[in-house]
Image (cartoon, rainbow, N blue to C red; front, side, top):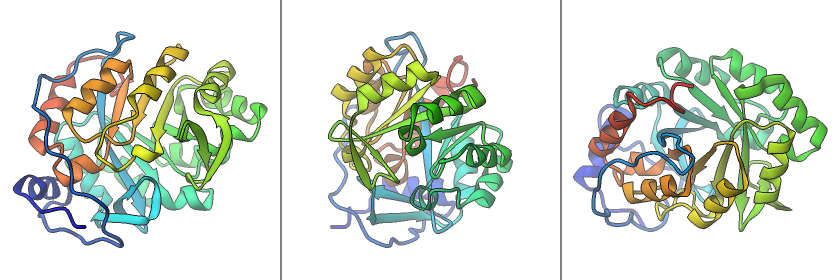
Length: 299
């Protein structure tokens, strides 16, 4: 079913693409967005005293800016043909950090959009973190060399403790440990394979091996706009001493507040910014509330 197009949705497309024209999709996705929760004051600090940041997501597939539903490549919506313009517009709206995922790289096991990543990093002043296909230290070096300040490593960390420890010792804060979970179990290989490793146990082992930061994605919530898995996020945050970034399912400011209450450091938001479920004016307001606070955006 195609969600009904609204003025709010058109405003979001205009912010993302520059002209408001939908770019079409390979496969239109599922149910219409939820109604907006009552808008409240921007979220404050997290349980651990860290400012919570909202980070716009830019997912790359075939050179375009897309979003998947629950990580399924067959359920893709294309939102823009020029990721560089999208990056510039999110920065102009006030974002202090961008989250870029190379979806083709996640499938192929190596970075596939280095040219686009370099172009985006060169077009904005804010830091950019990149995930997707970071299976080797050389791949991390490639994205850092393209201008990213952090690389998100996931699948490679499941191969051995020695390999995981090498990433953390070699790159320090420049590597973020990606913990992606389906039904509480770690998923790898672009989310297409599910292991028998519990996400919370895996995150604890990564912290012990030297991880400086975790980004946690609940796959079944990703792209749904129905809210993050706050119970799982809370368990993860309470089990760790290092910062946790939450991704997946965030559709309203109430969802952001719930993530802040769980103690996360930051929230990665994708589809809701493009559909207008988190309207541009509200997103800009949240970005502005972060502008002078120390924390994730400028670290």
